[in-house]
Structures are given as C-alpha cells and as structure tokens.
Image (cartoon, rainbow, N blue to C red; front, side, top):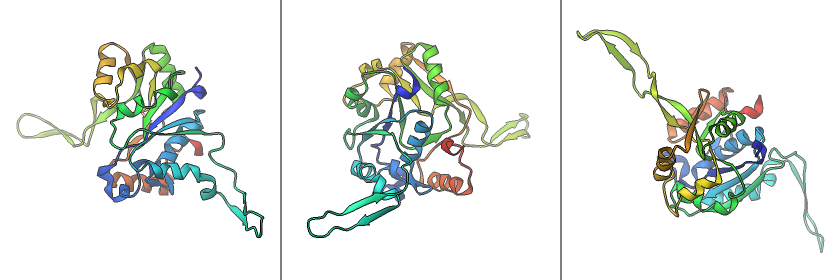
Length: 266
C-alpha cells in the first residue's frame, strides 16, 4: 500500500486539562495556532505528503470539530450571498479556492472519556482494509512520512512509532569529585528515546486493543515483547502543545515565521 492510500487516524478526544485557559469551550485539537486549529496544522502536515484520508476520533466537545468541518468552506472563503425573495431561495457563491480540496474526513464519535486504545478500537470498521497512520491531536513535527512508512515496511513488524531523543529538563553538572564543576551542559540530549506519536500500524494491531484500553500501556507493551514494534528515529522538529506556555510559544514561532512543521509552505 502506497503512502497516499494510508488512512490517517487522529485522536481528538482528550480534554486538555493542562491547557484549561484554551480548552474550556473547545477540545484541545481546536486550539488555534496562527488563526487555524492545531488539528488543521496536523492534517496539513499529512495532506502535503499525500495522505488526505482522515479518520478523526472525536470525544470531549466533539461537536466543535464537527461544526468546523461541516461549515469550513463558508467560514474560510470569500463569498457572495444573494438573498432571495418570494419563492426564490438565498444563494451563496464561494470565491476562494479551498485549501483542503480533495480531503476525505470521517468524523467518528468514540466517547467523551474513552482511553486512547479504546478510541482506536472503536474506529476498527474504518481501518481493516490496510496499513494506516495514527497520531495525536496535540503535536506537530516535520516528520518525513514516506521515510517513516519505508522504515515500517523494512522492519516487517506490525507497528512503528516515531522516536525522539529525550532531552533533560535540567542543566547537567559534570563534577571533578572535589566540589568543582568541570563542565556544564544546558538540558542535554539523553541516551533514551521517547514516543513522538506519528505511528504506522497494521490492521492486526486492532487485535491487541479492547473497548477502553490505554494504547500506550498494555497494547504497546505486548507489541514490544512480541517483537512487533519498531522505532523510526526522528531528529528534526517536534513539539507537543500540552500547556498554556507551550501554546504561547508555538504561536510566537508562527508569528515570527519560524514554522518548521509547516511543510506546505516550503
């Protein structure tokens, strides 16, 4: 299956409790970056690389996402309204070309409090026909999806996760053992790797899931123990928006023109 044929699952149901300033009235994927929802940015990353079949797992305030896509063209395009009279209906003419032309977006309700694995499990009827991509609705990256899929194919395994080299939260002191500091390193990269989302999954992974499991716990543990999980190491840009500080930071990046995840602009 070619990359363009892979469906893209995006988990959009979390409550975003650490971003309460922005998520009181909308789900976290709808928090705006540069005037567009974070979800739009994630979808543009995929669509720019040929993946335009999306399956969105809705949950907390899912109606906001439904309304966004149902009304997208009329909310974003220049338009002319001609109001009818008598038995003539109003007409609307859209002038601006769509920036999501050709996208197929499936909106699937997966429960307000359902865990991540349970959300994927509830999408199973949409995902049985081949390899699919999966990521979270709160992170952006300049991941090369073609390289990710090629790595997955070469591994011969059921699941591949994009891995990021972990970075220390603190500056590290290297001491001489006598109270002196020989070297100071500000938040260095560590030897371990962390999950950055952006998975490639085979339909058989659905057999590892249950109605309300946490995908990052038992399913991924089992896949790893059975030798069915590989990692594609990503050294480029990646950012998760979990807190208000991170929300402000990514908007500052956008406003300054420093947008490494905006592959569609290159």
